Each structure stands twice: as structure tokens, then as C-alpha cells.
Amino acid sequence: MLLSIHGHFSGLHLPLFKKCAWNSLETHVSLLDVEPIGRDEFLERQRRLAAELERADVDAFIAEPSASTAYFANISSSYELSERPFLVILDRNGSASLLVPKFETGRIGGLDMVFEEKRIIEWREEESAYEVLVRRAGYRKVMLDEHARFMIASGLQERGVEVLPTSQAIQSLRAVKSERELDILRGINEFTVELVRSLQKCIRVGMSQEIIVEAASGLFTQAGVGLGFWSIVLFGEQAANPHGGGKGRILRDGEFVLVDIGTSLHSYGSDYTMRKTAAIRRMNINETCSVVDGAARDVIREKGYGEYFTHRLGHGLGLEMHEHPYLNGVNGEKLKMGEVVTNEPGIYVTSAQAEKLGKQTGFGVRIEDAVLVTENGGVVMTGSRAISPYEP
Image (cartoon, rainbow, N blue to C red; front, side, top):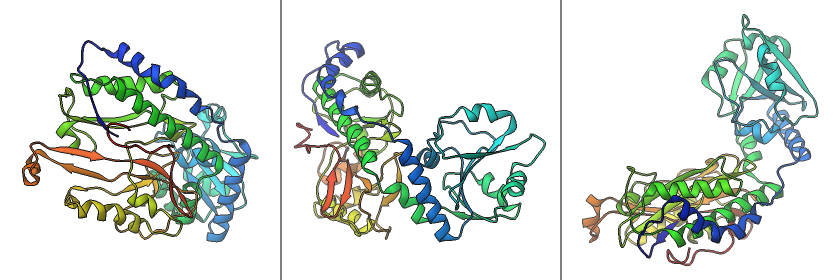
């Protein structure tokens, strides 16, 4: 979100800054009162995955702990990976297996996993995990999660297993959101908007970027959703770098503030800056990602800033902050009903480029929101739209 700030810093240090913002934010915490994904939905996801594997004539889908395992079985990507493979395997018959180091069986067994039933395949330190898997399961052709490490693919291939990348059909299982997922995404994104609005009321000239980041983190934590927090806070010409610049910058009079922050609720993320409408209107089912990207790009180009829009328009949003589909100028993938994507056009002008445009200093503007794809165009997930930088 691009914010316009009024007032000067006068000793409003972090505790008082947080208190100031919390006074406005506290009444919106109820937006987070959304139930997590239930057992039945996890099992239905596994059934849909099995059906896609059957259609693709693939024996099994194999993943390390990641967003994919969080989606299919509630096994979080926070499980720390090591050189010892721990694999989650869902096969075309709907059966689940876990390939685990024998000495880790107890710890892994304590994870809050969701399966109808599962088979534990243990491997000892003196064995090859991949040989044990092939011997016990007999797989000949598998689909490997896109986030799995190269050593997993290599280990399987060396044992004669054909390894395929994740198909678009399986990627789409996660991309198209259920009603419960939409409720979660709506809740966390609406709350994030209210948090930014609360920050704006308390930001003053003379503050540092870091105090705003710390306050935002503390506010998310106070509301019970601090895990997964991330932030980009930029002042003035620093915002010409889309993902940030140096630290320690102090807000000066007359500067805009770019705040791009998010966190997660039940592992589903928020990603918020501010939004506009050209691309949102094109977010219909069966519209291609490249056409949506072009709709936003055309508007910026017509205003003379085309060369300064330097990144793709957006990306899918869910268990990962960046996931399929990706809205760029070459992606011919068609949007599907129920996908949630970000719409984040930006203009980034460095100080060196500013003179060419008749500006005194560099600047950066990014407008963003999460958008639900429907038959009638995109629907923003954050309620009311921003009116201007003065009324976000």
C-alpha cells in the first residue's frame, strides 16, 4: 500500500506506536475467527490427487515436507529437512506411505497428519532410502513435487524409477480454492488491510523503516497470527527497488511510504499493498494469464510509464505466498474458477531515471490485492477498495 503521511515524529517509540495502532486494530481481530481445514477436506484432496494420478498413469506422487504436503496431509513445511530423506507418498489407489529414517519414526509419528490409514516404510542408516522404497513399494513411474530437492529425483532415478515433474492438473488442485480456503484467505487479507490502515494513522515523519516493520510484526503477533510474518517497508526513492533497499532510512516530510506486508492464518497467506481495476476486470475463467498481465501493462504504458513496470503482474496465493498460476506476459495458462491470485502492478523510477520524467527524485509505487477469479471478473478478497493513498 502506498501511504500519504501527515504529522511529525515526537518521541512515539515502538511500544507507544504499537499501542496507537492497536487501538484502531483491536476491533477487527474477529476477522480471524475462521475454522481451519477439517479432516474430511484433507481426505477429499487425497482422493482427487489419486484420481489425477490414475488418469496420468503414474504410480504415486512423492513430496518432501512442503506446501504440497501441508495441502494434502497437514504435514507442515516447517519440518526441518536434512540429508536423510523423509518422503510423503500418495499413490494412485489412494493409499499413503511415509518413507522415514528408522531412528526418526517416533518424532514423525507425532506429527498431526491426516490420512485414512498410512504405511510407515523405515530405512536404516546403513541402507539406501531409495532402494528400500523401490523394494517395498515397487514403483516404476512417479510424479515428484516441484519443491522436492534434486537429490530425491536423482536417488529415485538411479534405482530405475521414472521421475516426472508435477503436472498442471495436480498444480490446479491447489490453485482452485475451496469455500473453507476462501474464508481463511478472506479473513487474513481483510485483517491485513485493517492493520495497514491502523499503522497509517500512527506513522509520523522522523520514524525509521524498522520501527514500522517491528510494529507490524508485533500487531500480527498480538492478534495471534505472527507466524509467517513478512514485510517490505520503503520510503521515498527507496521504493524504486521493488523488494527493498538499505536499512535505517528515516521518513522525511513529503515522502510516500510503501508498505507491503503479510502473514498467515492456518498456514494461508495475506499479501497486501493496494489495488486497481484494469486487470481485475479481465480475471474471468478461461482468460489467459498473459492477457490479464497485458491489461494492467497497457494502462501503465499509455500513461508513459511502461518501461518502469519491471515485474510480472501477480501470482497465485494460498499455502505459499507465491504459487501457481503466475500472471506474466508469456503464460498461456487459463484462469480457473476459484483461483486466488494477486494483482500488483508497479512503477519503479530510480533517482537516475527521474530527471527524464521531469521528477526531482526517484520513487516506487506498487498497488496490490488478492483477487478471487469468478465468471464475472475478479472479486477482491479484502472488502472495500482503497480510495487513494490518503484513504487506503
